[in-house]
Image (cartoon, rainbow, N blue to C red; front, side, top):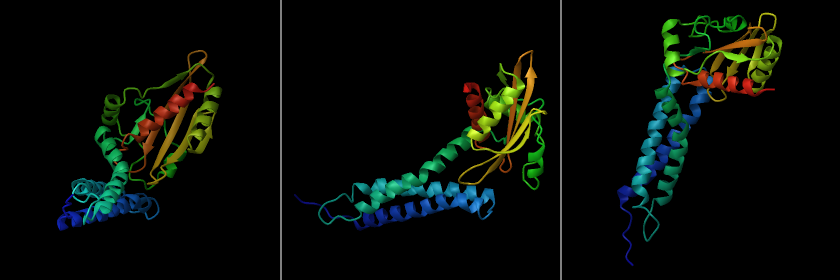
Length: 251
């Protein structure tokens, strides 16, 4: 059976897909440490992250276009490069693709609260935010309206326990979620914490407020605010939901 040799152009494109995939993987992998440990501006890092995804997409497209022309056979070359380009490109594109989808779906806000009329006030975390691009003050009615439209389920948490029991539960949930609890004021019904992401090292501040509700219940409000970035990509909403769900399932 006659096997047609690899077209030199297909071989070169297969190798190009491999090199593009490697480059995209390096860019994507370096973005988090570049911001967290080197202090490179977040906007620059996110731009590089986005272009790393574009490079990965180009590598995937080239790999798919050259897999068949370079498939194993007599005098064919480039299949391994195309296959590696596809696999590495897919791995490099995975995290940025999720980030881009989150960025499109999430409103451009970075401060969420279960009580938008009277958000829990930062005390200790306010001091820790000095110099942060996003000020500690709640942004106001515009952000509250966007939050209600995007996250209608972010509402006060009601528990049929005493405020003291609710405070203990909130503290345990905060610790279980890996937050750095920086203030415990049970007499004021206030707990403050800091949560730092593993990869980019983005820091968000959290305030939990605990108040009596009725004769034997407790109302818990939680506020989560990013120190940097115009949008939080939905992270604060995910954090509040996880806190709420864990709190409700505790016994």
